[in-house]
Amino acid sequence: MLGDIVHLARNLRAGFVLAREGALALVDPSVLPPPARLGLRLARLIERPDAGSGAARLSAALTRLGPSYVKVGQFLATRPDIVGVKAARDLESLQDRMPPFPREEAVRTVEKALGKPLDTLFLDFSGPVAAASIAQVHQARIQTPEGEETVAVKVVRPGVRERFARDLQAMRFAARWAERLGPDAQRLRPQEVVETLARSVAIEMDLRLEAAAVSELAENVREDPDFRVPRPAWDLTARDILTAEWIDAIRLSDIAALEAAGHDRVTLARTLIQSFLKHAIRDGYFHADMHPGNLFVDADGRLVAVDFGIMGRLGMKERRFLAEILLGFIRRDYRRVAEVHFEAGYVPPRHSIEDFAQALRAIGEPIHDRRADEISMAKLLTLLFEVTALFDMATRSELVMLQKTMVVVEGVGRMLDPKLDMWRTAEPVVRDWMERQLGPIGRLEETGRGLRTLAGVIADLPELSLRAERLLEKFERAADQGFPLAAESLEGIGRAEARRARWQAVALWVIALLLAILIIRS
Image (cartoon, rainbow, N blue to C red; front, side):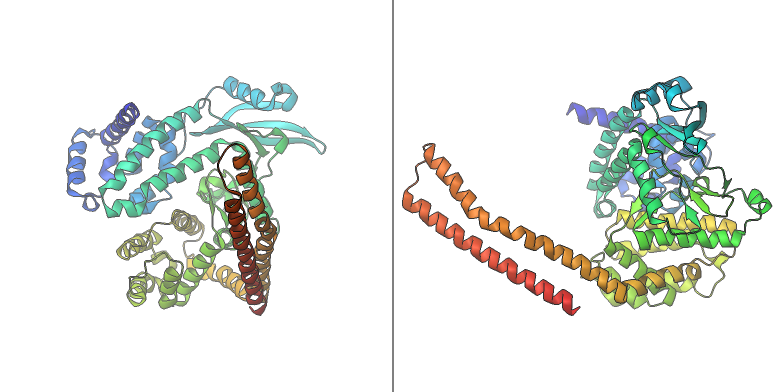
């Protein structure tokens, strides 16, 4: 009870700050139930007269609330299904910038994390060059066998874990109450959203996991000639510190510098879109925060991504779902797009495939045969959320993150090439992946996965033969310790368990053989 009161007080404070700074003006009252609409109207009475608009209001409110809420704002920028496309677009411009903490505190953190004095680790160590809600970055130099190397050292902000833990408990409390508002709130799964945020923040605050994300993405793109990521220095990385290659390159947002260096903007836009789709569809692991501040172009014309705090992962089912949907929209096969939604179980079977296909046509047709610069991906995304809500499609956080990242990536690509055609640029990547998955190579890979599963089942079979013996031993020990059990009963139980184990083993062998036959025949 006391904990609930504390969480309520924290949420009331957050609501007061949001209302005072004018951030509640972004909430659409038409989507709220009547009591919530009344509450919104009353809350807006305390709004500051000189409050800004859009992102300025949110930025001011979230910055006042502290690092946790700045991170929440960044996270919600990837969830337009929750906050609306307009608010998500405003949140994109929210800069995760916080006042830096002193160099001395960073030095203490580094020395504690690595267990050595700073001057034995680095040749020099600068003051902060960038500060965000969770960590800040310093430039340093290290000695390597090849010579001196400049590196970026990311250091976790002191006390940030405790602050996040308190704020996340209050957010969990608010999410539980939000789900009681009705079916619309339940469809958005606010508790799941908070837990996704909690996992994301936990990963982001353990810089070893961010280094692992860098390493995994680097391994995935090692054969890609036009995209790379900085190399982490594992011996100078710990939970609170991440050391990686310093990126000496041009920001993708600096158009004048790109042109002065002779880079082809149209090629860069195409590379950006296709690289992102390769990561998502081919590898199932993608950078989910690809705004211009996290993208650079090196001297060789390769794209370089940094800041891997927000990553997305897709399973094979989701990747096929995504590829078939993109291909269906590209080819205007709305019936197939609808079928994919039903086959994946995302739309309840009580709805009509034909009706859903018709709704999808309303999304797809307006974007065909129009110039790329006439297509608003934000409007397209808004319509998609409206249509899927009509058909009770449950929110899939990984797909929403992917959709939102696609919008951001497309916006960056459009900045480089105003005539960028997202669909034509995407088609080769999607088509090649689908052909591979449905062709002989894909069949062999799927067969290999099936055989590995079958081998696991067969490996478990001997365990069944031991179950009866283990159970008999338990009964015997119980009997020895005074548990009354007749010898005839014990023998009967043993025989029954043995028969059951034999039949289970026979059934599993039959299933295994049937699986093997099906895999071989496919």
